[in-house]
Amino acid sequence: MNRTKRFYHSGETGDVEFVINRIVSEFPRASLAVAGVSLGGNVLLRYLGERGSRLPSQLTAAVAISVPFDLSRSSKRINRGFSRLYQKFFLSSLKRKAREKARIFPDLAPLEQIDRLRTLADFDNLITGPLHGYHDADDYYARASSLPVLKDIRLSTLLLSAVDDPMLPPAVLTEVRDIARDNAFLHIEFLPRGGHAGFVAGSLPWRPFYYAEYRAAEFLAEQFQTRPATTVTKRKKA
View: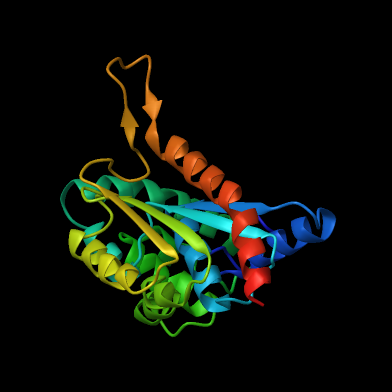
């Protein structure tokens, strides 16, 4: 838990920027890649989209796994059927953190209101939105989703998701595909199965193969290998 009143949230890119800038300042000659999963993936894509080509030159590539690209539709999807198990898990953790915060900052929200929260949208309406400068949950979802800024990303980025992700309607992935057709920096890999941040394969349960981790490392290695040639080409053209 941080020591301030604010939480992390899907649109908070300041932490990512701080860490990247710190690493770049300490290792100025090292190439850098970054990966984000789920909410962290949304934050990463927001960071890349908001900054466009204004990124540290050492930043070579990125990977975003199981991103809830549209927070509004993700919020509705997670409140249906089997997905409600995910919501119950996440909400329980958020409510616990909110109670801890409220004991230090009593004006955050009354404890009895926190206890009555039943959905993630309820939590975002009561806490996430107002606490971080948004009018309500709808305003937060609209302004913190990564979908609107995908077109502005100017770094080679792999988007790895599953069509059966219980936290996102498949229609959203179709929209992401459409955006990627016009943005050569986006590399799409949407698998039929994989769940949410799962992608576990293998013929034996005790010998699993974690595809997401493998594919992320493979993609980033490819980008590191091709970067020097790309840099030289650009210099020659200049």
